[in-house]
Length: 297
Length: 149
Image 1 (cartoon, rainbow over the protein chains, first blue to last red):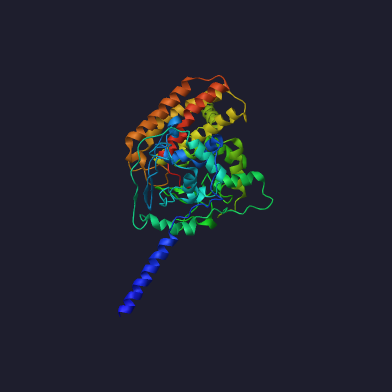
Image 2: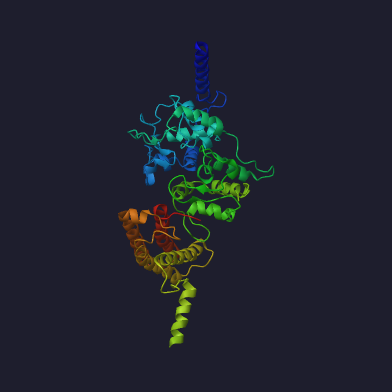
């Protein structure tokens, strides 16, 4: 009996050790981590493509206030309320971070103290960025004004409040490989768009349905689904449902008007404001990619 | 006389895409949707002129701006209590945040009135007036419309 008991304890500790190991943070290895110096001009482009201000600046901020990244309004979802942190270059934000620490946050979802970030911070998409682009973004963020103050913690329900468990989640869903395999003869423009949409733009985080554990359901890529926040539906933007021409898609991202002059609405208003800051070439690339993805019925 | 009036009405509706309520029994949801559909047609006409897809015409431009001002004035009356359910994309915030809603509709009215008062005679001025009005599309649809389609 005593032996059985000891055996059980042994098994349980083995399980705990295994659990601890599989949930451990996975860092970028030295060969892949971003190297400086970054180009802040390209960093500004990625800042808009990634929509950083939409979550990290104050809600409703306009103009230069969109560059004050003290942490914005919480993202309220079925899993709980996620509070975007201060990412301004001051002591309450990312001031003093190394590029490697920033890169591990962006592409591995790991904080400098080793904690996992919740995937409300879309590192599952940012993982597809190049190291150079991460370095460029870091250079740009470090030029922005420092903002004092740390926003409070979010409110996440059990079991999702156990951050260590995200390590397991990441093993299932953190994959930097491209989502779509474009045909070999796909134009360079569509490939450039693939990078922007699947990587920094993180369009699929809203426009793709999720499975029960909150991971992206890849066969439904960009096929739309219920809105993560509140009521309404996020539209299917694959060729099965989005009948606009490439020029019309690019024009929508620039002006916020659909071909028949309905206007952008809901959470896409913020996104479109960011897309309007990109170049015509980047918007055209996004449009070319959207015409090339597999249709989702 | 009657024939002349009818002809005039027909001319106005076909030229400017004004939609007339099809029946006196149309409910508030249909009424407000008709206003927004007319806004959409006017915006397409204005947008096409500004893009150069159609030639600039000052009379049409001013009519569009007058239509906007009239639409903005009429619009808030079509959201009575109880019209929040059914075939509507109107967000619950219209009724749960009445002060915000009032501020947004008041801004729409002020901006459309100011735009119409510019009385543009050239495309550049019309573009400015058009921009003053259409900035309201996004800002209002961000919080007060829930896309269901």
